[in-house]
Amino acid sequence: MSVPAALALRGIRKRFGSVQALRGADFTLMPGEVHALLGENGAGKSTLMHVAYGLVRADAGEILVDGVGRSISSPRAARRLGIGMVHQHFTSVPAMTVAENVALATGWDVAPRVLHPRVRAAAERVGIPLDPGTRVSQLSVALKQRLEIVKALAADVRILLLDEPTAVLTPGEADELLQVIRRFTAAGGAAVLITHKLDEALATAERVTVLRQGAVVFDGPVAGQSAASLASAMLGEAARRVRTPPADRSAVADGVLVRLEELEVPRESGYGIAVRRATLSIRAGEIVGVAAVEGNGQRELLRAVAGRIQPLRGRREVAGPIAFVPEDRTTEGIIPSLTLTENVVLGSRADDPWLRRGRLDWRTARARTASLIGEFDIVASGPDAPAASLSGGNQQKLVIARELARRPRVVVAENPTRGLDLRAASAIHDRLRAAAAEGAAVLLYSSDLDEVLAIADRVLVAARGLVSEAPPGATRLEIGALMVTGGR
Image (cartoon, rainbow, N blue to C red; front, side):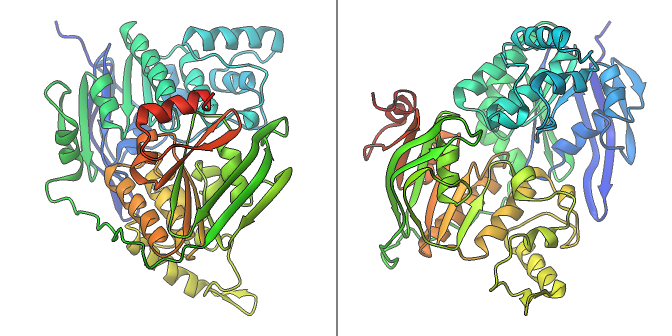
């Protein structure tokens, strides 16, 4: 007698306005397996899992849990069936503590004497220790992601849906998380892993499903697949190649656009020093990458350069206008409930074409937004679509489009390709290279060291609040060692 699938989705169709997100998609998750779900941004991955979790109601199709047809109308109904989800964007309440957020997700008693030990035990049980009494607003991005996983697993779920869970984690943290997932499935659970990291899918999953434009184009064992074959399935044989801008920057002025001298920057929490005596300069036409393990001052360094944090002391000279791409697009980059046009006009400058005599010309703003949608290949129904209707990758493209369209002299980017697929990430890299080729100074941090090495002309290492420059020609291993030791 065959074992029924832990979760099966059959013929799922879903349309958002004029966008057909899912076109009769099938998906089968077996007990005890990690199943990778791959596809470009906007391919329908998150939408398919949102149907399984009750966040989205399908237009057609059926859901089976343990072989039994189910109607899942809400996340609460999904959790009652043993389904938990770790979302691409954080769902915790910043003003509440870690323990209170776990209680909110699980329905546990909120009495601190009972709740704190219970949350601490749950976090340790899954190998992700967290302080129950810490407010979420004080957590780093990586710790917020850990909290999302603890919230899901604390409810004793049997089916775990993970949407880009390692996007903001360092390689070591990602490995630890993947071990947690493997332990979960080894104990009889089943997990769906949505990821753009093909090596992660190959190393972790037993089976893989690939979506393209809302339809399944591959479903089978990971064995026998390669990064190249999966990328081909995701992009299609006729995938458009993104044009790479010319690398010759000889015509660009060599003036210094960013100069920091003995700069000290406080931690965002207000307690302690994040950056100590930082001295650096970035010239026009340069892309300078920052390599660091989470929590070593890189976030505060970039925000000081962008003018988002006031330094305690030292000298800061940064040419304007400054473009800033934050790593958490949904809380700092866009307002999801506003339209694309409204998000584009956020932070308008006096010389923007839609501002005339202090009044906003919405017709001009909509036309400009429509132009950016086409220029930056943003998949959206139009300039009046709510930003919340876009996939995560297309939301990121919107932020990049808005910031770079203002022809900044300095670009500061935190994890700009977080959650993006191969083609979209390559397009963002090309945009940053083009900005540098046109004379901008670019400061980039990525939690993916390979991305830093691929795009940067020079690499800065932030460790223990100190910023140093990696020697020219330093290897990945040497830079990794500096990230841990700070050169000591």
